[in-house]
Image (cartoon, rainbow, N blue to C red; front, side, top):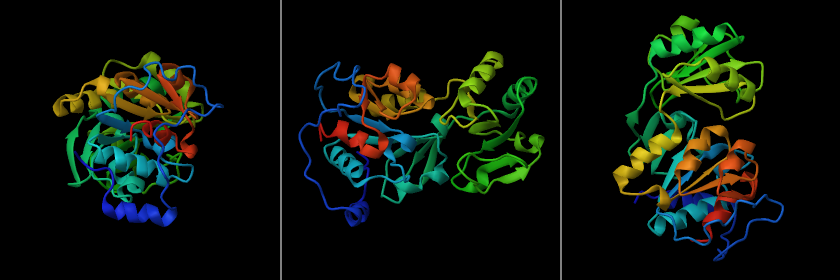
Length: 304
């Protein structure tokens, strides 16, 4: 199995905090909605552990806490396969790569599969220029927006945006161009930036989208994330799990936003974070403590 953290990472995290004594079982915090918790009781340890990054594995500072790192290291040492599944592109995996992650990362909501150990993109699911143009053209009549794309690659040179596009998480080093230039090559993800909430924007977009695209979002700050039809975290994980001989029942997945919905419903045990979006909490088998309270570790420490 691919290790989650190398020896280098162990030293890195020890610099932040001293090791803690893992307990055999830790209950969900009382102030967390646990109405969906423990439906299946104390099941066998999962063979596949999948975690989102922002709002899930990463803390409020965008880092992997020592406790979360320790839980994942123990899981990997026990034989579980640990996978990152994120809306982030490969070039934005710094927090986990710096921690020594060498496993599989499902990036850009399933459009890219990246082997961190080999520093290699091993699978892609492109969104065609024609599909992007049709979607953008249909949306133009309803919403005022700007566009950007994430193309295939491992550095920021694959980011293209319209001249006046404003990234919600600060300025990546986008190449800038006209809308036609941004949409003239296949992309992993199309980004739609508008001055309204993501939920209402998604509702409007889905109402006019054709069957060539999949629309989701991972922030409430007026950003849609568009992939090719059939491309989402859950679908990509299903293909990978089949290759690895793992069934959904043997998987646990952690997430917090609507781009995690398919992944959480695919896994035998879907875990929403305490800070999760209501739609995610609604489909989850369990609600863990918030991301800044080591919710991933709290669940994994039952087994590892």
